[in-house]
Amino acid sequence: MATVLVAMSGGVDSSVAAALLKNAGHSVVGVFMRNGVKPAVPAPVRAAEGDACAPAAPRRLKQGCCGIDDARDARLVAASLAVPFQVFDLEHEFGSLIDYFAREYSLGRTPNPCAVCNRDLKFGRLLQLADELGIERVATGHYVQLERTAGGRVALRRGRDAQKDQSYVLFPVAERALARCEFPVGHLPKSEVRALARELGLRTQDKPDSQEICFVPSGDYRDVLRSRGAVLRPGRFIDRRGKDWGPHEGIELFTIGQRRGLGLAAGEPLYVLEIRPETGEVVIGTREELGSAGFLLRDANWIGIDPPREGEELVCAVQIRSRGSAAAARVRATANSVFEVSFEEEQLAVTPGQGAVLYDGDRCLGGGWIELRRTVAATASAL
Image (tube, rainbow, N blue to C red; front, side, top):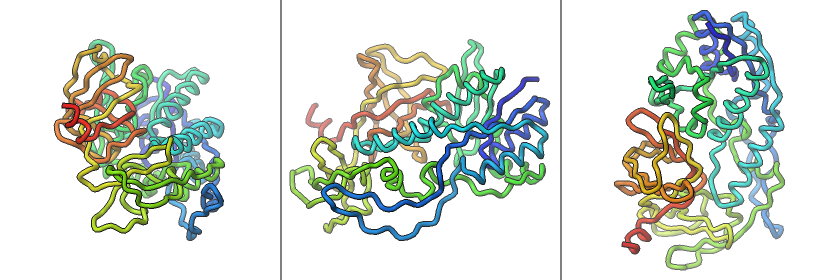
């Protein structure tokens, strides 16, 4: 049996993962990665030129992870399992993650911090800690399944519980990192994980699942922008025909597909279609105009397969948001490791900055970052 370093977040999933490994005869070492985020609710972000956002009402802090209470729960679970436990302060590393988060909004993109965190911290930094401790294998409570192929590679598959599957946010984790991982709860439905926790008497058995980004305990990402000294950049709402719909308080307040909070009066619902950071324009339009024929994919990471060569095409399904469905598409390799993704049927709210994950059935082939979406109208005019 191996020694396994288990990332214990203080939640029920990682608690059960540690217990299952311990009961299977492995030597388990628990580790909690502290993010250093203080659960305070700051004042609203201020706009440029002295314009202020409306005062925010007091907000209830949401259930996250990596906080003080989570560290205590993780430590007590480790003690009940009689396994060694360590806390590592990753406040500096989480600071870099938060900087990325704020920077993406300033560039008119919508960040995907959970995927970046998995790549750089929950697996990247976790494996570094394992190396420092002389431990080969690591484990987490993610709902994914891993298969080791005859050729020595790994295949990442969706978790058995479709409602809890987390393969989408693991797409940027390198295959060589995944090859050192164990996912003990990936083959279980969430209900069975809860039942096991009760059977084992774990204190996290009824703990609610994390609902928010761990460094946004207030639930409002604008609080993070303020904490990073962000100044909102105001501009104008326009539509595809060039009509000016009036001012907005900052491009950082919007994301593709957003409908609520625009403050515009129209005879039909309006959505954010595009954000232009260079001009400060937020392009709005109807739901029909929100459709996209495809997009460009950059910085792709491939898991268990070799990437298509330039000019080659891969037929697969592509998922463009964590809780969305995968849609049939063709992925064609172009120069400079950029891939053109073309949907068989148009998709709504393709969002630059988000991850696009490729699937063959329940197998995750990897994915990359949405760079530039192709509107249906633009695609038609090019034909």
